[in-house]
Image 1 (cartoon, helix red, strand yellow):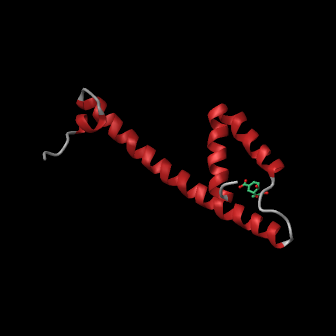
Image 2 (tube, protein in one colour; image 1 turned 90 degrees about the horizontal axis):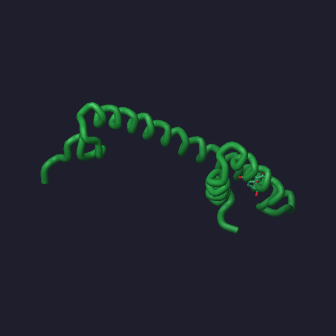
Length: 96
Ligand SMILES: C=C(O[C@@H]1C=C(C(=O)O)C=C[C@H]1O)C(=O)O
């Protein structure tokens, strides 16, 4: 097997576009690493809240608060923001 060229890897038709895409993809990979780190940090903070509530005799899930979180994401990102927030909530408190 031959090594794919930059234009093949990026789908670009010129070397100039392939170089731009390659650089921008590196920035996206770095942003994704930061986003994943922030999600992991959010999961840890969310777990502290859930454990405190459960230890006090309460329930893991607080739907009123989840509605606030969903609204926050929807206001910032539109309808797909709601879907993103639902996935994030599932990561933070498991499936309900
Ligand atoms: C973290 C909390 O507990 C749960 C997890 C939430 C979250 O990760 O944002 C929101 C509501 C709760 O279902 C909370 O009540 O704030």
